[in-house]
Image 1 (cartoon, rainbow, N blue to C red):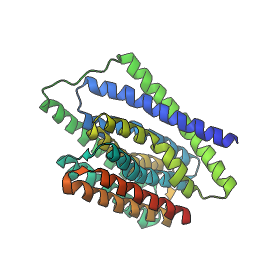
Image 2: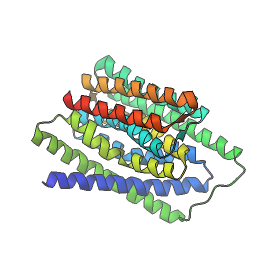
Image 3: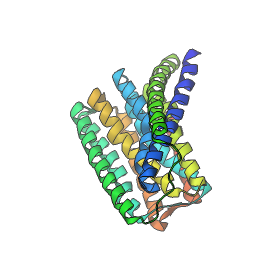
Image 4: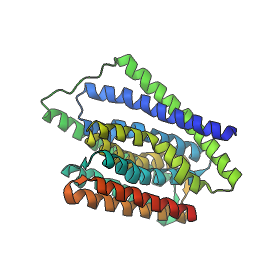
Length: 310
């Protein structure tokens, strides 16, 4: 019974920690007049990816590497199909041409890079982890340059957050502490629950842990979509998916080499296929409509049935 309590406590800490981290970081970003799309792709995406990062790194440190990979791939599929699909039910997600030509393909390329590395040696070793982190560093520098360019092109100064400097710092530190503690609780309790039911860590990682660590993306994007900030909603999802593979698995692989199961490769191929479908949806009319959202949610439902039968 305690395992279930710790699992819930862990998820609460992850979600509230990510919330604090995002609020503090976004307040800092707003003061530098960074546009919402850039904030979504960087600060918000990094904050909402923090649970996956905490869980996967904690799993790698504890030697539970199959949960680290399945958590990231499962979270990315959930982000793309459920978070985007649910947001599209509220309001069509308008997709900028630059997003279709740059960030969206990059998220697919990151999944292809993971597939290639995993297929070569059936593992993500330390060198692979360093390569993923290096690609992430290039991506981050590129986003910073884009942010500077966007700021210089903006004449209107965006609304400055009310939070003071020390409040921002406090929110960020408390958020990080809660995320680290929550990640530890989730890995330990989820592993114990999987053992008690005779379930594989891969299944637990793809379902319960992936859903729990993706809650921040779901809540953040839904709120953004309801407020009409569709740029931030979509940027949050795409940015999180890129961060999850490049940063989260890169860091986990650099810490402890991870065995890649055939199931992981199949799930990654499914992620690439679903990403291509959503990309085509968005490319045709430069938006993800409500009908697209319904189809995406139905596809995720089919995927859930498949992994449970598998």
